[in-house]
Length: 72
Image 1 (cartoon, one colour):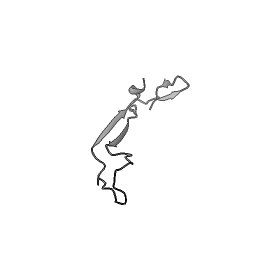
Image 2 (image 1 turned 90 degrees about the vertical axis):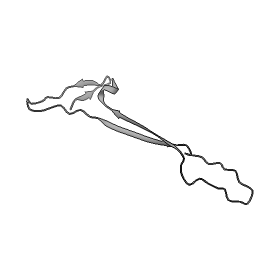
Image 3 (image 1 turned 60 degrees about the horizontal axis):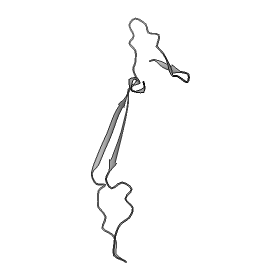
C-alpha cells in the first residue's frame, strides 16, 4: 500500500514483487439523522404527563466511501 509523508502528503509508491498487487485502502462511514433528534421541549397541561412519540421519527441515512482519489 502507498504511504504518504510530509506536510504536502507526498505519495511514496510501494515496492512490489512481480506477483504482488497494490492494496488500496477504502473506508466507509455512515450516519443516520432522525426528525425527532434532540427534541427536548413539550407542551403539557400543568400537573399532567406529556404524550411522547414512541419512535425517533423519519430518518435519513448519509453514507460515503472514501478513497485516496477523494483526498486529491
